[in-house]
Figure 1 (cartoon, rainbow, N blue to C red):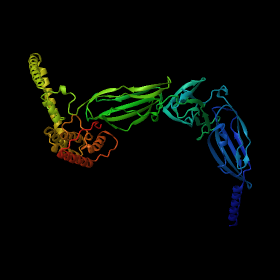
Figure 2 (cartoon, rainbow, N blue to C red):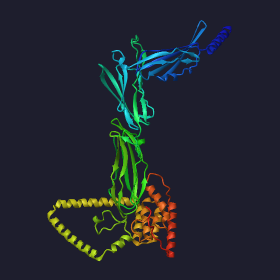
Figure 3 (cartoon, one colour):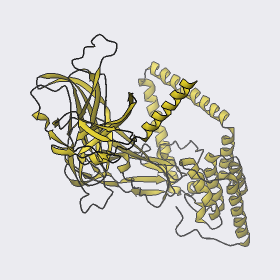
Figure 4 (cartoon, rainbow, N blue to C red):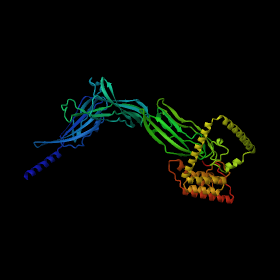
Length: 593
């Protein structure tokens, strides 16, 4: 029992002695001197006595060196009741430039180490033996404009195998750095020695003007120690190798004076459009236009917005622009794609102005323009087919037929009607003569072939019609009601058909049904009718706009069928009241678009 008590007391006494021990001395050493510019110095600081592990401050070394990772360890030994404790800090220093530098005194809890002088020599002043490991850096431009892409290349040279290793990325203040592609590996002979080379490429986009230094990447690896006797042991000794790539200083010029447009420096920029519908359109039918801006050597955040200018007789429903940045052939390629649904509201011929985006050519150092030329489009009325001349006179149209077209047909002059009849007779005679000649000249197998193709086409058309009728019975009924109301001019029937379409949320049928009802209210107005053209129906216009946005735009709208029903009913009550009182209202001088 006495032995246990004695041992415990002794242990507590020794522990208190260790805890209360002060730092008695501080020593600092380096592993090499002189050191080449791309090599690392291992600095070891040893504090004798009880020292706090956080008492080492490496900030005093940042003036002349890049400080790497610091490790710390503590050791306590007791010999003949003599306790000795040491704390050791090990850190890696990378010289910033050539010359002679001083590692200042390291202060650990009031005790200081002696300062040391270090000579940093160029890489080419090493001995004639080729080096086993080194890193080179290169850049395509040392002077560039703000936001202009710099092409930066790292090459890691390995003469022998390594156990493990890591290669950091370069660093630069006020710059966006992005790796281009994957690493390339190949072999090459440098100074008469074969190396395995790992090549890594980066795009550096400076975000501020001035003179900046691109800090070279740091390579750290574990390699087999030289002259080791453990050739056949389970654990071979390794040593750490540190290399740093040379720094590169670049001058970034500001935006030139006189630039009054969004700054876009590039070697090439262009703007394209997708316009698949052609140049002939119909009032009320949407047109989708996609405009794409492409630029080299920039990131997507630098691309400006694409300007959109259209005549007043077009409603615009833009989608959210999409941007992307890809890498191809060691170059960044940025794109902005803008999609827009355009709905013409008035018939006629219109000129869409050109789309022009200015950009700065970094090769010629001049302002250039990416342009889509102006385009002339023809908008036809909603009740006229685009290819009316190609339609047979005996084929009735199923949509767009209204009182206006009937009145137009009845107002054809008599001389034109007789001329048309005579032309029809001439055409019939010529067709009969051609048919008779065709019977004598056309081979019989072609006749049967055409007949078979005609039968197949007819069967396919009938099958398609029956399938669509089976899938959309409500749409067919609504179209029939609209067609009937348009032919009869019955306002009540048109109103009933419109309200049924809105109640069923049939967004495809609401706009045609609304046009039919408006034509019944205002039979003297030609062409497409906007509800805002008349005071009685102007309340409907916001609901129609919300409906169009729901159909043709990806953004959300506040269209509600119940609210639109109420607005239509209020408009009809107002119209009936004006009609009963004999009050005449004129169309707005400038109809809304």
